[in-house]
Image (cartoon, rainbow, N blue to C red; front, side):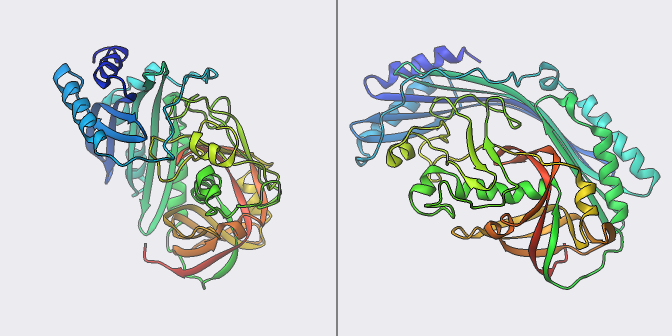
Length: 442
């Protein structure tokens, strides 16, 4: 691949006098997939994707391409300039961002993770498969690793660059009619606790055999980190984004400085040195800021890009998505502050309730009340007198997340990394009431 700076300069020259922004993303990765205790797929990929925005006299066009030779660049930018002439003027269109200094973020690139071999991934899968065969269980899962580099540049002098590695090991174990699941994403594959994940999935699958059906209704619920994160990320995306807030579509509209969730909840977006790190700049090349969203249940702030900040007469917090964005800015590095104790303590403190390992098929029904529906999966248990009493069949839920997270009874002291809308750090928690509407076949 040619030096990305040289490619950007060529694009700027081709753009001429119009404002020009280049977003270039380079990705390399590989994945091993296994099912029925054997490897079923090995894939590897390498890609470079360009996205170029051209702005002139209130008009804007965006073009995407994946070739960087001179002929391809000339054709792509030339086509964009022709289309730009035919665009309607947008009086609200902002000019491109000028360069601003940003803080150095944590180093999230690990060469060993980028260079993991198929043999290494295969051996991790084999460790689980061998154990499952001995106990008449079946293993399914994926182990993926790779690296990425993002460059945001424009012809006003802005140039921002970030690279990182990633690895994710996720497994599902089947034990007759019982299922267990575990997953762990990391920037450094050396941090993944493979043995613990395997043991967790296997034990949960064994404990899930012969699940019982229970009556629908409202129950106290203990959410493991993945389950809690799946719901909280909806609150974050559809509640704490500046554009959604400005337009009156957030459940939190008009409630800055007021309590909106449980006093046990504190949430921040902090890509710089927080528990869910990431890029030090956003997709317009502007510096990301640490933003406390919820403090002891009180709404302290929402995140902004330049457009939403201008509408709200405030400053951008550096949370722009690739422009244009129908969602506006959203938090991508969310961390929920841990409480105390562990998951076992949440279970011991429950007289009767339901433990949820994971949700799936979650969908937003009513943004204003954050009513969400979805189903439990891969390990759902009845808790009685502070102990796991028996496995239960998967349940569908329909619940207002505002109501659910206004009544948090406990937050565990250890957070787990979760792949959500971006990356998230989330502990387990217990909610006072959660509405399970029916059993499912899944």
